[in-house]
Amino acid sequence: MQKSALQTARQSYQPKMPKALASSLRLAEGAKTESVADQEEIRRLFPNTYGMPVITLEQAEETAIQSEPIAVGVILSGGQAPGGHNVISGLFDGLKRLNPKNRLYGFLGGPSGLIDGKYIELTADIIDEYRNTGGFDIIGSGRTKLEETWQFDNGIEVCKRLGISAIVIIGGDDSNTNACVLAEYYLQKQCGIQVIGCPKTIDGDLKNTMIETSFGFDTACKVYSELIGNIQRDANSAKKYWHFIRLMGRSASHIALECALQTQPNICLISEEVEAKQMTLQQIVAQVADVIAARGNAGYNFGTVLIPEGIIEFIPEMRVLIQELNDLLASGKGLDGLTPTSAALYASLPEAIAKQLTMDRDPHGNVQVSLIETEKLLIEMVSKRLAEMKAEGKYTGKFSAQHHFFGYEGRCAVPSNFDADYCYSIGQTAIMLIAEGKTGYMALVRNLTKPAEEWIAGGVPITMMMNMERRNGKMKPVIQKALVDLNGRPFLYLDAHRAEWADTTPTYVFPGPIQYYGPDEVCNRPTKTLLLEKEGHC
Image: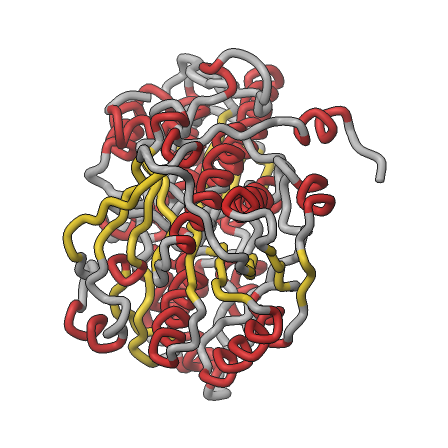
């Protein structure tokens, strides 16, 4: 296979990792834990994995762990995120360090590979081709949920056939919830199969007091920020377009916030703020139009607007409209059944957006919110508002807009040094937890704003992150998503600088492409979100 110069160079990159993982180690156990909410219900559902302690891996003087040969299976679950291949590389190297006869199997196509017995053995020749590369193509991913008893039992039979005694699930909040359910079931059945999770999602919403960030977030945000910076340089040069840029992040606005911190756009909308302030669609439009008008009146007819993918669902009136549409269309009733308020809102929408709300449905019959082109919606409505302001004598500028959506561009990028190191460390940590007989844990690497050698590895019980939520009409245990904290330092920094960035004085920052070789301050900086959260500056 032909390779680029960067592909060839990256294959030889040796990821950095915590000192404890490179030496002999011992486990230090903390106090018993509780779930973040609904403690009694979570304890009842997970009697064997609830209340376990947080684990820290520490350096020790004794010789490295020796073990009888074991086999481990790995699953990539859900959407892609840069660094997944390095998690698998870390698993492989950690296994071989414990015992060269250990084996690693990759289940093909996600969780369905475990259920259907589709797999390959991952050998050194295969692993070496994928070190430090983007994507999930080494074994493929999938979105099958592990929720049914027959699926668990099929997994037992497949693992028995291959001699697998542990499964590592690399995924987001839903995938790791499945990992926790699987670990609990296998303990109940006493079948001798451990389950360990790894925190993956570019959306950044799998984080808490123990998990500082999910892998892939760093790389994806750097990719998007490069593109935003390029657009801002173009806007500052051509001086004639407003660029409305929608970014991935349906459930939370972490990506939009991080990209704003990196690039300093004129406007950045945050879904969680919209919900907290109970903003209407018209209020959002007015807010954007006011900034554009102020810049236009000063002769600056250009700028950038960052928009989280899921903002529509955070606008209270839009959420009501979407729910009414779901119910009406599911029952076969027409739009005449809308309440007067929702009917008026629906009538105010651009025709193309209104059609998307009624025509594009998911398999459950619900509106596919991720397909709604919010950037186009805002362009059309802002343009209309600016025309009204011009008629009122409040706006003298010119408005011409371009729209963009950045999503898949960031999911399979070559991982940054941070993600390459972080993911490799996660993989190695998962193997150490397996070697110590642990199950129902998520591999944990923290202290991430420090050099990699000072990172702290360990494990956190997955039940510690869980609460009960309504899913498809039923209350289910799930890992609690982390939304943008409006009292947190990253958002407060954005809020404090908004007026400055919206002003006519140029404040754009141009991050440029990810750098893999060079000084630490260029190549190895973590996200600004992490720096603000952990060190108070960015």
